[in-house]
Image 1 (cartoon, protein in one colour):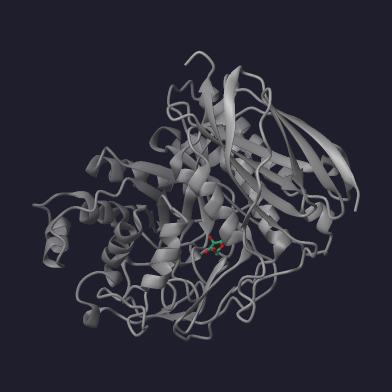
Image 2 (tube, protein in one colour):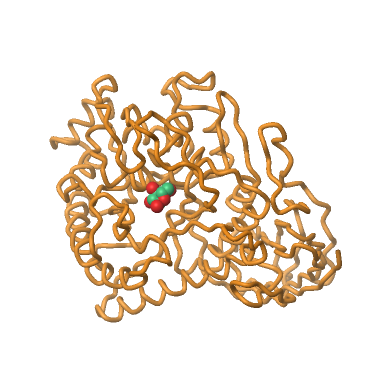
Length: 503
Ligand code: AHR
């Protein structure tokens, strides 16, 4: 193992944008064991009165999720929300076509609101644009948000919820460009339907914010034309354009996989350009931002069809060190694109493509769990526009890529900051010289590192703490400079406190 050198400059006056708290959201779908046996399991020894697993709630609280997107996903496009409200013993059991499973509807909109409250997250509800109508979408807003005195708000009261749920964030459909979607539409058809749905939804509650479906990923043949056309149809009725992407190391090309941030940034840049183009073309003063409301590593090939059973084991991905380092870069990209990216939801929060698994009454936290927890806990305020000089390493997919991936935040109100560093090298450690160049006095408060020598190492039920973020000894800051050692295959977080010299 050899050692490389890098330089990083931080300047409180050079900022990218305000870090939206909603960048630390999650996604919960009626798929596999995410809801049933994940969030909700009345027979579990951990179940609270409402049937939710307290061990899962506690882990989700530790991750500080700010919003949860629900109920799908592909599930959404066949979902009748009325199936999931009212007395549980009268709710229908149905064939669920997206994942070929049996849906009992024991968990629905009101249970979801209780769940969000329990973990302190804002609900982000989807309306069905596949088999669903614009009327049913508007009715759900009425059910959730009207205080009283309408058919649907009174129905909510009869169901035991007299106070309105005040749901602010609404996804108007899911992946409507995908041939796999129930009721898939062309961009023109979808854009027009989403515009009309959002119009009715906003007439019922003008305070809501809406998310338009963008392309299902940047490999779709219709990308980014789909996004342009749908945006042109629905611009004034939408606040966000959604992005989805699942990364994977399918060719076992770890150097390229560990440079995935290059692709994530290009995806955002292209859609930022599309937003600007449509805004200009429409001569609009209205702003639309990006919502990366499905993101995760997903490629290991677990089953996706449930053979018409309840809570089947679907997509229960096991994550290793290289996957965790991709998650670290992804979160760094969120900070570096914080001027345009305002919502992000990791897919999903438990069991399904998740770094948190349940097995009976046990719970397993995978390496990327700790990466997300550290960033969602410490990234606050403004994202800093860093100057980074790091050696390049060659990758088959992206050419030369810097060995370090770095982002930093600073909350001007408190002076608290954080630096997030991924060393993507398989073999070389990096000695990184940090310089604060804005004249403030900086101290390093705390540091953690998740690192290992084997990119395929993971946490198993037998060895659950194999890869955990460990506290590290901090270097001294002298004359506005400090040097930190970053081992190969590592994710490091340093928290800082700054004071203006004359303040
Ligand atoms: O998160 C799993 C699935 O991935 C979602 O249902 C769908 O939106 C995406 O294709």
